[in-house]
Length: 287
Image (cartoon, rainbow, N blue to C red; front, side):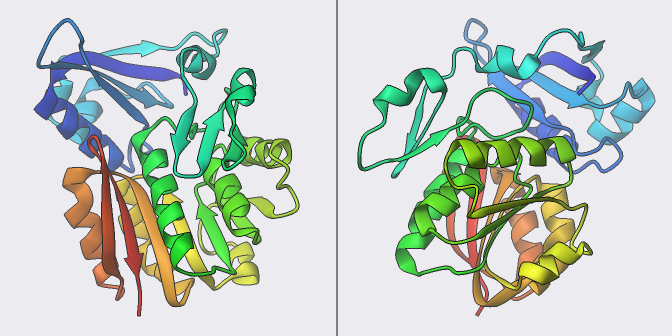
């Protein structure tokens, strides 16, 4: 990422900006980070990461009036911003999963699935509400049935693919549109001793032959963003096996109805909604 659009806004405006950014194809569905200001109750710091410096007119058109007071800045290329952001992160325990960096490996307990994910340039460390929600959902659905064909769509760092492989001991297809993320996911699968179970592939869409080769899938996990999730609903469900399960995340709680509507049109039914702060994870099944 080359640019960041930042500012301090109200909680309502932060939610609005996050939602609009997540639905903006024009801006490339940018990643958004928002945090409550600890010394300024009621206000939130928001950062919207962009691949290019869009002009103010475009930003206002895509994000709405709350973007007017935000400042656009170029990120220095000589700083690893992901590493900077992860310096103070602690291990995450979610169900049987324990996600940690190299310096915390001695904290893993025998009953836990150890997942080693160090700082890198792909999204997904387990600390974000969407990833944690997906891990809870994976723990829930894998207790209910045995899945044999599994897809992790938009794998990022590969943390969910590693979790799926460790929990199910089955083959997992892990795909992403970003080749750099796929490389990191492959490295993380090797690092976590599941390289033989996790197949990492770069795929820009469901037209890629890799999905037909490995599908249909009886479990699909997609931790992306609300906009792409809605757009992918028909193709995703077309690659779902009969009586298959879908885990969707990357959406804000207020975007839940929008995403559910897209999947109900494909015959998928909501089984469980998991809320982590302002983020939602949905478990759906199709009869």
